[in-house]
Amino acid sequence: MNDTFLKACRGEEVPYTPVWIMRQAGRYLPEYRAIRGKADFLTMCKTPELAAEVTLQPIDILKVDAAILFSDILIPCEAMGQGLEFHEGKGPILSPAIRDADTADKLSIPDPEDKMKFVMDAVRLLRKELADRVPLIGFAGAPFTTATYMIEGGTSKNFLNTKRMIYENPELYKSFMDKITATITEYLRAQISAGAQAVQIFDTWGGIFSPQDFREYVLPYVTRIINDLNDWMKSENQEQVPIIYFVGETAGLLEEIKTSGANVYGVDWRINLNDAINRLGGDVVVQGNLDPLSMFLPLEKIEERVKDILARASSARGHIFNLGHGVVPQTPPDSVIALVEIVHRLSKK
Ligand code: CP3
Image (cartoon, rainbow, N blue to C red):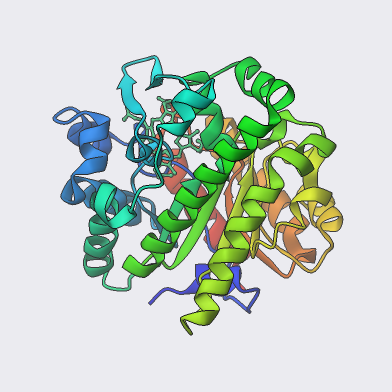
């Protein structure tokens, strides 16, 4: 197997810097749009054969060093009992929005092999179809990022309802977060049992807080998941599956993030990677951190930026190349193909 990605996650020697791209299976690929033209997004998520097919597309097209399961961080919200729809051009809609104890109490902690079996079926199918070509990354939203969608009822600009719940009704927030945290822990455990070889926890909106609030309202729940997963892996005597923690708007929160217990820290592009590494404590594995919109630069400029990031990453124990957030749908696929080739060529030892 090409295990460069897993070795880098563990901080071991690698022949070159492994690379994968957040949202690598998505609308920027014509091959994805061809399948998406025949099925809506949620149907694709819920049909293991389709989810597996689009997961594999970027492996063949981009030659990336890892596959990431095609699914969505909002799948567990529906499994907990909230309505989930995706509307063209409007993003996700979750209903009813969770704003009081009555609606929160109606949500359950689902058995993932029952309510989200299609995800684990996709993982099992993918492990077969990948036949160890590259490792498979599973994922979930972090409890806080998941909660924002459930409380706001969808995407938000200033997270008014979320912050109001936190500040006006901290008891409700805490009990609601306990429920989401238990759901996500079970969900990731099921993905690992089904064959996920690494997992990434997406905290896209974690950066909307001051470091103090992040420490109080975001971090404890992520830390609980990481500790519980690690304890469980030890007790099962199963090989440590690397846990990647990605926070959007990382720069103000690195001192907090480094206490999460994750094996790999995702870093966005708003900070120089060497500065992030220093503030994380030096002896760490990082993932990132090219601005996704720099994919619109001419190739020679992309190459310069890759060179710069690789040089800045040299002080870390390990580095996995990625964009600092998901690739956007308008991105020219040829630039992403070139990016992967550039990373491999420039980092070759
Ligand atoms: O990285 C991958 O290729 C794996 C698949 C993946 C998707 N979403 C597919 C998707 C992953 C890891 C996600 C994570 C996700 N989903 C996050 C966290 C990461 C991030 O980008 O911040 C968030 C916040 C979501 C929630 C979500 N899903 C939103 C807000 C939207 C709509 C916005 C948009 O871009 O249209 C989605 C839809 C979604 N998830 C698409 C894909 C490929 C587009 C759906 C389509 O084909 O119409």
